[in-house]
Image (cartoon, rainbow over all chains, first blue to last red; front, top):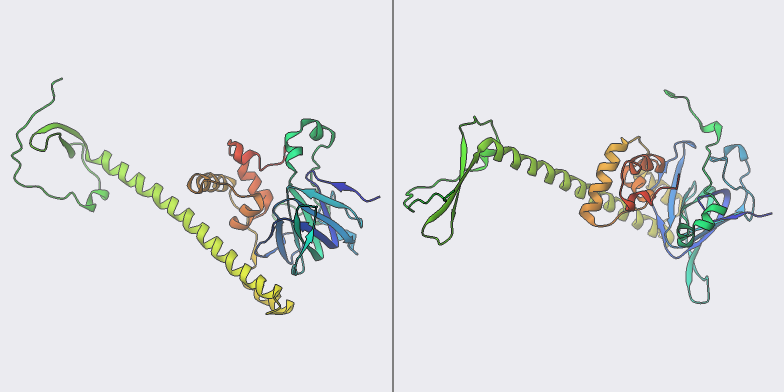
Length: 148
Length: 170
């Protein structure tokens, strides 16, 4: 069953669709664990990302705590991540009856993570108590000994 | 104590000049501050050691140079971002192919480095005071060219609410 989260969770996939009110593209960098260039991004206002296609080699997952199955999704006030392939054109869609949003896709090995939860989660002790934040655990294959 | 009163009969004056900022001064080297309220009579004379004034001016210059360096680095960062955004826009508008974009983007690609958390804390706090707003952890990671984990190590050293709310709750 597809999992959905909006509290400090992440997803990783081969193809991830997203929509947001505000899309940012950062300058690329060489990923410290994958060793390849990645294109980082931020979904600035009300970001949503969902796995459309799963990674073929699950041993390359960066965070063991990432959700990996098709349909798994995250949602947050701000979502950030990266993709190993260039992020292409976005299109404007009707997201709600009153708001439009930008929609696009991440390709290659793609990762999206809730940077800040929705305001209601930040303000609600009850919701935070029932849905504690998920700590991210790095895949042991990327762990290096000090001095390596 | 009754203020010292002297007649306005000075005949010569000279500029102290920028040379005051260099060299050391013996305790007997002092600066006088003369205050006149009506333009005709000197009402008050204050004295302080030249070394004390020099140290204060140098500290002021150092602080301003650090601020200018931070603001300058923000402009350089934003220039790099704007240039990359222009390249990405060209790709989105099909002016260049994905392969060309990938090749050209190599010029902007950096390797993440390890930054001293204390340096991150100092720069982030000063940047916030100078600009009047904060960035996200992903913005700071792009600015410092480091990981977000590294940024959060620095943010944890800052007590301000505007910084602690950027961190996941412990």
